Image 1 (cartoon, rainbow, N blue to C red):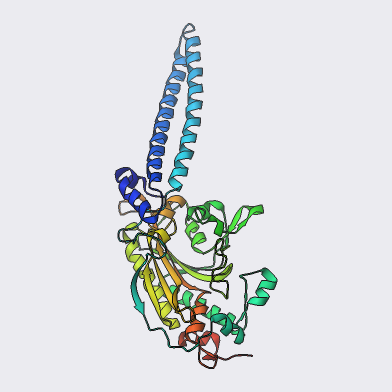
Image 2: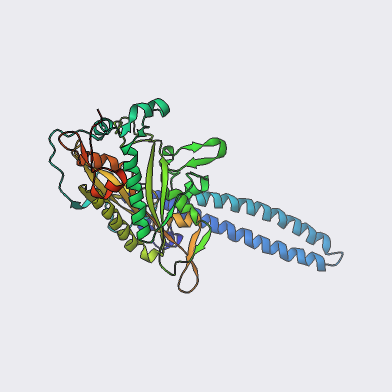
Length: 419
């Protein structure tokens, strides 16, 4: 949720953020009205409760002649209090709904617009010159790494098996990410992948993209699409000690996405699938440190991409392409030879205090006063990376060179076709 102080003191900042996102700025005025109505209802209920309390005290001290009138007054005030509390609850619910409807306020400098309005910040490496490149699925099947046909037979479309050295390649990639994170002060965590509704909602995943989330209705639990979700819930309703700096976690989990609305997009191979594995960095910090921490996360992502030796670019994602929780997001997109295009491998988002406010995660400032923490997240490795590795390192004979950093995990410097 956005900061109410910012809303009240500078509503135009919030309206402008909504405009840049392509969302309705009128929601800001609806929240302001709901905030005023809520505060008025609270004041009315408090005043009536005070009057009822005072009247009750008078009854105990009243003479027999005064008591009936005072009892009638106390009864009338009790009814008014009951009605006022009902009105307060109604206004509170309307306020919460209006508050939850507004996306995070973007950081100054985030480009306005939609998916195609990003700003390219940098390109790293040169796309390889490959004559008639094979795509990752053709390579993966020929090398015995990937089985989409049996994945579909067992689970349906957009499922797959990673087999043999394909499984080793993914495990090596994820282990490398966890090792890098641990060496940089992150606490490795394997979290639950089923979470309560309040945690899923608290991270902002039950808004506009709720149809992307798998729900287990019988248990009222949700399958996570990223370990960002359980890691954000890890310290919900807690006060953190950030006196030693940010608290950093690296979550390794399977992730699940329905890919609703993506029919016909990336149906071939493992670019867009329903289940994949990922190592996700997650940070809690003082909001004053959030932008610097965002750059650090991007730096660790760059280090991982350097280890897999693929060309990539860094983009500043436009406001309309941000998730509701993100105030700013940087993507690293790797070159995919068969598509002659850059495709997303990593994202890192600064969610400022948006998630922590929903999940009641605080820290004590230098004076000891509790304040809302900031949260950030960023991909360190995921199944999709296999696409970039296979396609960029393919050889003319159909073999694939394994990046040096992954050779110890895979057990081979070159993978050769099995058929």
